[in-house]
Image 1 (cartoon, rainbow, N blue to C red):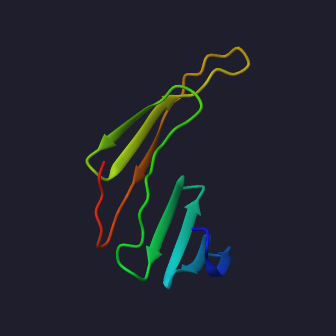
Image 2 (tube, one colour):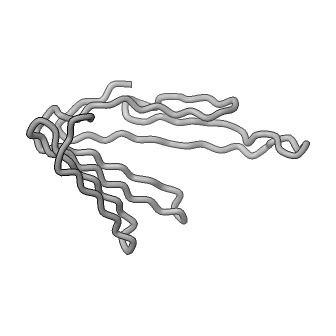
Length: 109
């Protein structure tokens, strides 16, 4: 959003949560982000106090060769193999998963 007011940002180090909030056209938006390095997870919650105010597109990509597949209507999976480095062929296979959950909304893949 471009024309916002009441911008607020907070970092809670003990809980590993970043909260951002602001207002646009009378709607209060809040984003909370939690991350855990040991668990290799990041959770983002985007909310608004007026139904139908949150909408976005999500995608996964990386600079080198990869494949993205949709699993059902709420999950994206990026699969790839590590890149070559210092004349050593990359051979580590890995995956990144993204799941979209909604309350009172809809999801389309």
